Image (cartoon, rainbow, N blue to C red):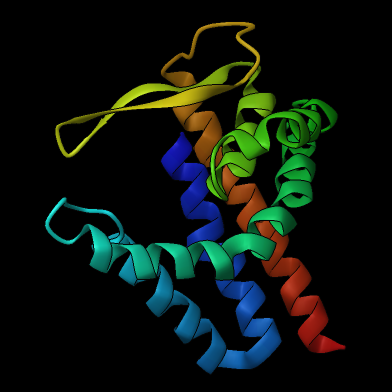
Length: 168
């Protein structure tokens, strides 16, 4: 669910944000930076220093869109019949516990009434993140479908806003 939420912003919300600001050239530049981070950002000890540049650059260009996504996901949460207010409150309270994606992950955790974070494995290495959200219940398989629904509604909401802006 952390990946779904981050992908909602990286793939859709931020891309459309930059397309509105600067058309296709700015949207393509953003996607190039985001892709470089995905490919090289901190992927190995050998290339750690090389990966630092795209990772930091991505954090910089994603800062505003990641925060812009908070009300979008909170509204989408309400449209899906969950508490948008709790979703937003958890994002504000816990979002800074992880870099840019933390705000989005916290929004999702608040929407689902659970917590995200903790121990995970990336490339065979243990990664421990602080928990975000409230542990009101354990995650369930149905939460994955719910996160996909929230991603779809958030994406649709942003698309409607962008089309409306472009029509004005």
